[in-house]
Image 1: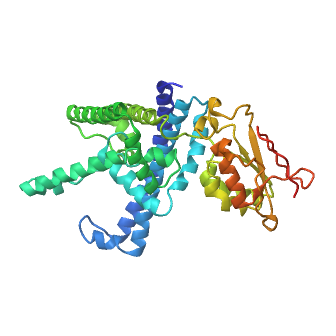
Image 2: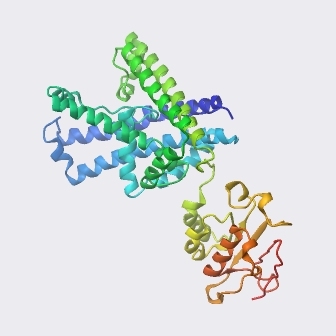
Image 3: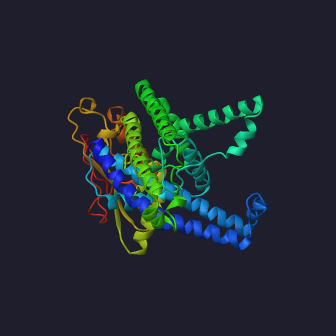
Length: 430
């Protein structure tokens, strides 16, 4: 699919999402906050900090803060998944992407929720480049802070240091949303992966990304300079929205400006995500999926299957078997595990056709889980001359010896193992 189709789908989602946020969720958050503030009698700069240090007040603040962060993260998840699926050329519907993006919320847990909330609620809206969201579209440093700093040379140097730290941090963590959403990584791992993304990019893509971000900043700055009126905020879509819309001409003009600006920034964000993914294509495996990723949610899925009485037959390409061995062996619902080599060729796990052993027709090896009491080390069915065996086969041999996954004959038990290989393999009976 083309970039134009990705932008179209993102714009449709943003229309639905903004109606939901501005018409329902944001008024709900505002009502909760204002009701609590009115009940406690808080006034600006008057015992405000001490009030929110109270346990009940602190819990309410964290609930609203983390709730807003999850909503922002979900919005980015749908947008990034949509653009990625369009790049992959897959057919999908918007409800499918919105439903599958809910699984991405699992990475926002534990300390990753705290760090991710600061990133999505504070840093990205403060930078206002590349990523925009509906819940917290803008964060600004109060003018009275910078106003005092401008009075001294040391204060001006401090302002420059703040801006430099802000944009350097933003650039280093530019790929964090992609790594968290498409790579299913938590914030710490995604931050490290973001730095690695900059290293693997070609200079052409680095320059193109940097120029695109600079162009974004310049265009938005010039638009703000031309439109000197105060732009509409989320609070303007409250109780008096319809009244202002029908009876205030200036409000209708500001609303038209708001619509055009959001249309422009949303399309630009889809383009930025497309550009970031194009630079990483062939270097890092970041792909969207309409189904939950097994690597993170496998334990939960197996537990659900066990509760429903299902017997699970799992087929995998084997790349994560070393990390998920304990999970698989301890799952009562797992009936059979099959390691397929069909999907390995494109990922670099299987040798190319020219480098295979002459006459190789290997297509699939299936292994069955043997009860722990029957485990013992067996000589692999492959010949001793393992130098001719591809590296992926060697990894499967080591996995079988260390975990007790071994071939069995169909005449012994109903769990059948099939070995198709260019080498002389004989089924061994338990």
